[in-house]
Length: 324
Image (cartoon, rainbow, N blue to C red):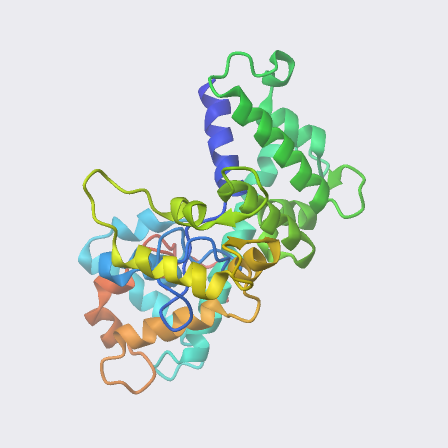
């Protein structure tokens, strides 16, 4: 029972949309559902409440705890190795273009590693493909026969099964019921594929639309990102989001976000978030303001860098097989 529940939680997190944000140069800090191509971070980009977003953007997300657990001296040694790898022209500086390329590289690696990890779990017959039946049986197991009768929230599990099947079939471009590695990547990371973007929008609306009318009102929009505590006054960023809903998100001013408006919100195709994050990191750590970074400058801001994409959010492994 514990195994199936842990698997279901993982799958639900994969099917959900991460709590992501662009840097201040582009959109509000509290953006929750904007897709950053491969995920820069699951954390809100809010430097006033810590640097976990930048930590994960610089270091990479998957192995974050590794870097966090190093001693100060080990952290400096690890950072020096990372900086040397980012500095591709070996001039002793990290330029914006080098940092931008590095962040994109870490995004790609996260997706590849994530797909590889789950591929082994679901390719039960080892034919280098994953059939829907393989995925379904591995994920939901004998609960299919039991109609989820001994699961507390069986309606949720039934909904997840329906949603998983719809996403799988959408990712399965040739409709043969079997996912190639590319199709399975589209299943796990639909925001990376143009042909999956309508589904991304649909799932987002379903997640936020609590009254089932097929659109998102202001209460649902705010409720998706903020739940007030007893006696807590509403933070300034929530007030800002209310204004953005009315002034920016709701293009036709009818008081709702329809699917087109949701698409413009969560999938802003003309925004390069890795580029924005590179600019943000340079802005925060470039002490002499020459537009590039040195190891010395990064070491001076090591607590900030340990919370960035440069080091996989604190956990990047520096090893020989992870080449640029």
